[in-house]
Image 1 (cartoon, rainbow over the protein chains, first blue to last red):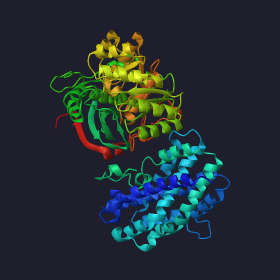
Image 2: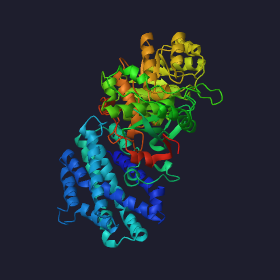
Image 3: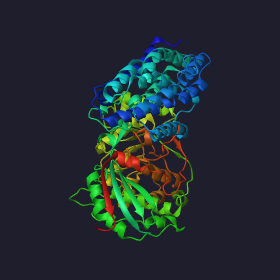
Image 4: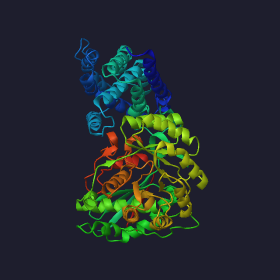
Length: 239
Length: 388
């Protein structure tokens, strides 16, 4: 069991990331209906691109997971692929969203290629970390931070897309699903981090540095709003 | 080979986090990319980073000089393609006009950033046309080891950066200092990284001669391997005074812009190291000439970079650093570690321990994404070869 202060440290980082995202001008524009149709579509494209590769990322985490955390990560992976009892394939839900947003076959092909390109980039980028355990921790922290955010904001994002982009509720199941599923995942994710730190005997100082490296920019703004133009007030909302 | 058109992109690429030194803080890159197209359709890219407090160039004046002076010279030239000539002489044949240098009205010391932008674009274009890598002209002697650079933020922020670099096992770190809490800053950084990591400092000309001497004395306890540009650019004799009174080797940066500067610094015995930066020194040809002079005089050279440079300057810097017979330190290739997005299709940034391999692709060895140039351009200037 890691010290409570360590768990608090991680939760504080997650909360800071989510707060900065929620307060960013891009999120505000989306939620308040001020964004253009092109901005909504760019957001939908980026969101789908980000989460289409979740099975691959979870597979990586399963490979590096300590024995205690592996069953939970495996369950999340099967759930993502629709191979659990609920049998809802999450990437399929993202394509339902993309179709409802009017993405034609060509654009959906580009979407799949863009997601795959990000996996390729992950594999070809020179590695700054010296060991797989450090890289694995950084990825685990980012994934669990996404779960933390989705458990708090997925439902609001879904409602914004229904209200301001006119998407029907049946196309927004991905958001409904994540707002529910990720409340559980967010807590389990922190348990997994805790088990990971203990198994690999990662010291508190190294955890602090890896947290700093992983969250030196806002991961949600980076993934969801990379293609959108700079907005006034955005500079200080980076973290 | 004739160059038939040119496009200038004045960019603004946001940084992942702000970077500061004693002169200013910036949160985005303001690089200028030069794209040239040759008669055979080959496209080459160069980069200029204009710094008023270094060469005196601004983005606006740099663009204006490119359009007014460099482009007419380039479009009227017929360049010898690369067919195996002596490399340094061939690079020298690409020399660009230097008119207006040291113009008292503009405050420009030399139009070196502008010249660098065009020279690198010519090198990239002509070598790509021949299917040759710059690495064939400047054969690499080694992989390159890059330094981390700690911005002039709070001491707490500096320690965070130091710990990141320690996590990445970077063996060399440069610290920006400003005259405020320098000793406390270096003590905290040294404590964070341990005794094995090489530390050096960069004052960006923030100190007087007396202040520089006192600061170097105060920092000597922290095993500092060099002190860069502690005093402003000026009489080399002043830097020689700092060097004579300090045990820390002095390195010239803003004081070293032209070959004449290098000669004056050597004559004055002003320093033990030169910081060579392509955009500051006017491109590969002029920088190699300064490096050659430094080597003859027993001056160590560091290959430096411009904060916010993109993959284009980083690639050219990589070739230079891998080629030079001996370098003390190397900076650059931060790529997407600093920029929200870099311009190259494949990442340029270094990996664990600061290591990066020499580049092998044709030209400068990086594939530039035109879509990103357009995405981040604040201004695009198209320069046709014939008047409309």
